[in-house]
Length: 189
Picture 1 (cartoon, rainbow, N blue to C red):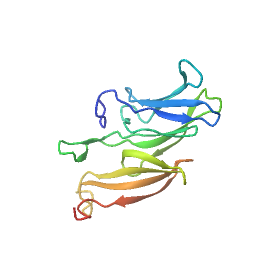
Picture 2: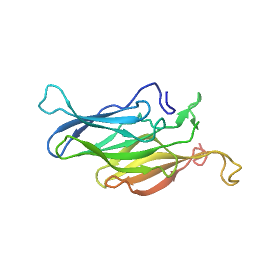
Picture 3: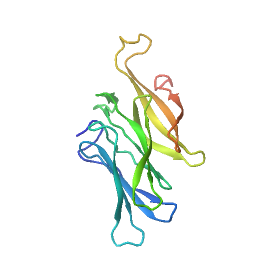
Picture 4: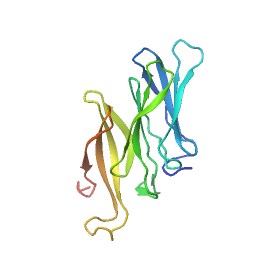
């Protein structure tokens, strides 16, 4: 079982898409060994779906996703949440170096192939939760976490993590910005 998964071989729930050409698509991820794979099928007016294509994502043995994908038009955004897990108290812990990021795929006009159109590495370690797309402005928002492993490297930053909201342009993957989320202690909780 890869770090970040809650069980062996799990993947995502399906995401449904209405391709601009009218085709109905269904897509899902499989956390296969060694890499997570995305599968896209088309099924309008067919008794059984046809495979449009599949694509491996992220790094071998360092890719997992259990969060639903974002589907919009003929595009699919997938995030990796490899590396983070929770201990018995429910606290998020970072047990290995994280290899996360977001990848966007596109289904071609003929609906017979898929390809990666952009990938972005996380500037701040990990994605957790489910990324969301704001259709009004085309921004993908994701909860992220910056992990500080050792206090000896920086006396002003203790070991632990900081939470952020990161904003990505859904068209090209450019990071538009990120903002810290106050910790419980900062909120007086």
